[in-house]
Image: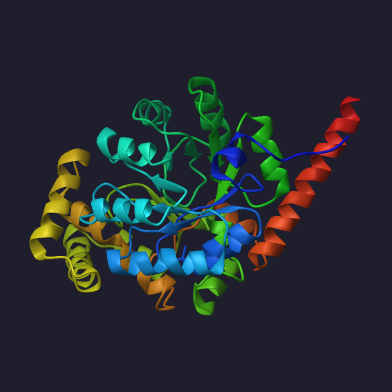
Length: 355
C-alpha cells in the first residue's frame, strides 16, 4: 500500500510535507525558513522582532534562497503591523501566522489577496474565535510547547479543537519526529508545527554557546513555565537570569523591563510615543501591570541576549519540553527526511496490523 503524507494543510500551503517550522524571534531567519521549504516543509519568518526595511530584505533573501512558499509571522500590537501586511501582499508571501488576531478588516485584506491565515492558539475558545474571524487553519499549541503557552496538554487540546472547527488543525507542542507526526494525524490534525526542533538544528542561526546550553538539558522538569519575564506563562529553560528574576521583587522586574524597552527602541527605531501606544494597547486588552506590559512589548530584547549575542546565562531560553529529548543538530534536509521516513514506516506498520 502506498503511503501518502499529503493533507489539507499541504494543499493549502503548497508544501510537500505537513511539517511547519514556527516563527521564533531571532531564530526564524531567511536561511532557516528557506532550508525548511527546500526540504519539503513550510517555514515562517519571525516578523515581530524586525523593522519593516529589514523585514523586506528578509522576505527577498528567503525568495533568493528558495523558490518554495513560506510565511511571515507578526502580532497586532506591533506599531508596524500594517507595514508588515503591506510587504506580505507586495511580495506574494503565501501565509501569515499570529497569536493575537489582527482583526477582521486586516484578515479580510489578507484573504482577499489569497494569503493563508494561520493563527496559533492555546485554548479551545481561542481556536473557535479565530475561525470566526476568518482563519483558514489553526495551530494548536499544548502546554508542552515553548514560549508563551497554556496549561492544557497537546493531546487533550488537539482533540477538542478538531471536534469544534472545520478548518485544518495543526498540532504543536511536544513534536520532534515521525512518531509524533503520526500520533498527531491519528488525533485528527492535518500536520505538526515545531519550534524547538528547528531551533536545535544545523540551519539555526542560534550561536553555538546557546545551542550547547539547550543540548545540556536532559530533564524535562528543568524546562519550566514561569511568569517572571512578562507576567504571562512562558515555558523556558531554567538559567541564571530566570532564577534571578524568580527571586527578585516587582522593582527588579520593572528595571529589567525599562532596560528592555530602551533597547527595543534603539533596535526598532520606534518613537517613544509609538512604543508607549503599543504597550498601552496591550495593557488595555490583556489587563497587564505596567512592568508586565513593558516586558510583553519588549521581551524580544531579553531573548536576543541568548539567541543573537550568544549569552545563554543572560537571556531567555524559550523551549518546549521536547528539548530534553533532543541530542543532535541535524540540518533541515536531514531532519525532515528522517521525520518523513519514520512516519511512513510507522504508518506502514499500522496498516499491516490492521490488515
